[in-house]
Amino acid sequence: MAAYIVPFVFLIAGVFAATFDPYFPRDLTVAEPEFEGHHATTGEDLVFIIRSQQESPHNQWAKQVKTDIEQQYRILNLGNPRVILLHQQYEISGVWTILPLLPKLKEDFGQASWLFFCEEQTRVSVHGLLQVLTRYDPQQEWFLGRALQDQTASVIHHYRFHDDPSQFSYPDFEAGWLISVGLLQRLAERWENEEHQMDFSIDVKHELSFYIWNDGNGTRLTALPALCAGNVEKNPHPRSDSEIRKALTKAIRDGPREDDGCVSAHPKGLPTCGKAVPKEDILFAVKTCKKFHKDRVPVVQQTWGKHTSHIVFVSDVPDDTIPTVASGVPNTERGHCGKLFAIFDMFNSKPEYLKYSWLVVADDDTILSVARVRALLSCYSARKVVFLGERYGYGHLKLGWGYDYLTGGSSMVFSRAGIQKLLATGCRCNKDEDPDDMIFGMCAKRHDMPITHSPLFHQARSTDYAIRFLQNQTPLSFHKHLHADPLTVYRDWFKKADEADSRIHGVQGEREEL
Image: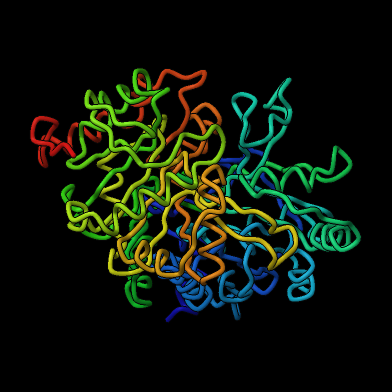
């Protein structure tokens, strides 16, 4: 049946799905009016690499992407697909940073023409992608993706290109991105011939692009408008082969429909897996100090704090006007390791805290949505080890040497089972002023406890991210009051969601003060 339908589908230009459907042909002139290709590309020329994670539900999401690609190959008679789940193929810490993996990718896939990288919820139209790639010679050095540019000089990008951030483009990972075998070979050889120092991995998509650019001597990103993200609210449910064939037959019978020309998609909606976790199951702990009791703490109380059921402000000194809980740890100007572990100890031992399944630790200048935290946690179990937030890395340029950590400013989420296991290891700070998030990350790696990344947590201000990147998603947090109005940030990004949630599940007057 598939062999009968597929030729007809490819012959009927303009038969499009109302929403993203990988099987219908793309009108690539929608995105690129002058589209014309001359380089034949087949399914066997492609390798798909999914930046997957081992933890549930992320592993399941990545497997769904893999299954979808394999199904497309089967339905469309494209041969045998090569679809790689990164965390399974290379069981080494730091593979998510991509750069130190380049020599291994060349060794394993150097006979392919193209490597297509994507995220754990990216969907791609394989035949549409093959059409796009006919424009490009894979033996040449090509770096293709949906182009992002910073709107201002950004701390997470080390203020590079501060004179004109728009001059430098980097790919939107959620839309998918590609490197040709010609570029892969050169990058792998260069990486092997260079010395690499221990360093931070903060925003991989920018760091990767900066390395490939090579101070202007390398390859710039070529924008590929057919790669899209944020163009669907959520991914479709899996369909059987017979359901897909029926849909194709119906599309042929119904005739042409409009299409946006996208060959990839990534959902904009917040990932949810059932009912939101009840407010009563979450303890929010805000790290603060006497210095900020009069300015930062009131902002939390006026914004997201009033939408919690249980919130505690952990400070170096008691203050009944807030009120605060004294951590017993003196304030430090740099790291706050002592304060973080004091919060862990309180959560794990104080009788009044034992009823909570989840602990969310935020800075006093973190701006977040309580409603979105609750919704996202529907995908996780507090009975399992869960350390969730925005993942950074240190030392990964030497593959297998480094470790991951959750960056604290974006807020960090811990399950009760995770806190119990962490404290049982005996991990502690050497000094109170040690960097809390990094010490925690080292402990997690040493004892084989996973760090789980969500791109919805943000360590920096909203203005530090590309506009098109934020438009793709439903953000959960931002960080910093410096050069930003936190009340405006909260109003623009989170207020509507929190107020709608509190109308149903309780408001400030019903909140329990600790």
